[in-house]
Length: 382
Image (cartoon, rainbow, N blue to C red):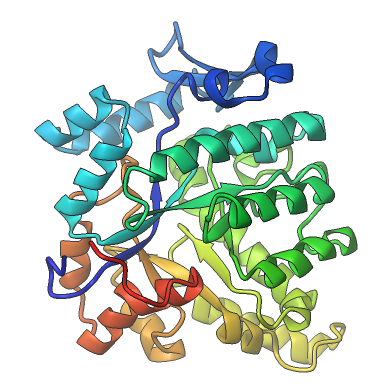
């Protein structure tokens, strides 16, 4: 396509799950418990109901609703956005949105599908059923144009054996190049616990990208967002800080624990959390590693991040210029975050092109680094 003079690989755009997804795709044994979408009588906002519990559970909180409404009102309602909403953000409108931005290839991530991965109260077999249903629906969605739309599969984090089973299925049967991992504890288990090690073994063996992707909706008990919902500016507070805080924890966990050292071929992405904080975090981890010497790593933590990890930048993140100066351009990918209301769509790529970034760095950030992360070496036909 090369609309802006470069081939563009969007590392992270989102789908909006249709209200009947689980009724259509969940296994028969769970049909009577299939989550469904309903309109809140208080706010008029859609919410998902899982075993009688709404998600996000703060959907009727006035301060959050007002903040979201203000954000949405700031975005100009183009005819395309109206059409996409009316059509439920189906695959055809996603492709049209990619065309408007000039995006050639994208990897698609969940929005509310995280309910199957991260709600603590789900019994493992039900969490697996929800992830399987979502993945089967996403596979059908991507079939509209599989060369341009790639799926990031959901794996249930309630049971590691089940997570491994579903990771194999989404890679070997559905052909997904990535799995999406919630960076917060699920049932008090963190991703660097010893019992999670077989999952990293399998993801490395499969050659699939392990992508940490947070949320500000607080699905699990220990989510960052749950701690600060009562703040006077709760929506701004949680949305501004939850994503980078979750990723800082994920990077520290994966490096200091030795997961990356033990799995040198594991490709890891840290997505939708900005990137400007990364040079400071790597400096801080190295500094404390040298001072406390309580980690068995052979090299400083930053070495492992720089060897096998990438992080996504927002299209208008001008501080990316400093990141490139400090750690180079080999570790950055771009996310438009379509169709979320805080995305710069349909001007995300245009805004990125306005930044003071060299053409050589643009080429890496817009295509090469995502292609390496997702194991897609040959440019797909647009």
